[in-house]
Length: 64
Image 1 (tube, helix red, strand yellow):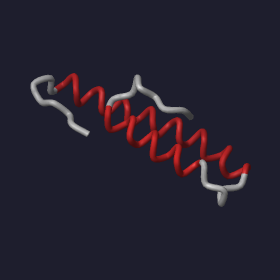
Image 2 (spheres, one colour):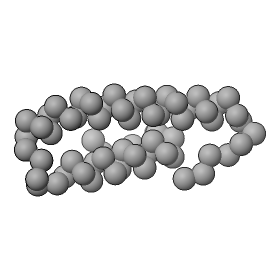
Image 3 (cartoon, one colour):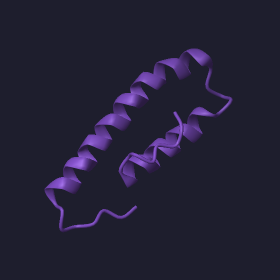
Image 4 (tube, one colour):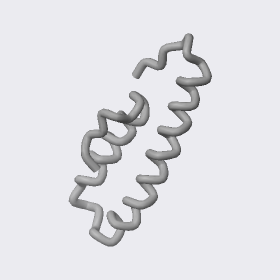
């Protein structure tokens, strides 16, 4: 997964950290494929929670 500028700040950082971990040579291809689906779900869930937090508290700025 590449850098996602459309994601909220916390989710963007999580995605970048996971992307760096997935580049590790110690992860075999089968594990990487299985974790990719899990990763997409996690990034999606964190993004949804972060957007909900931002929209439910518009007066507070989320800083990363």
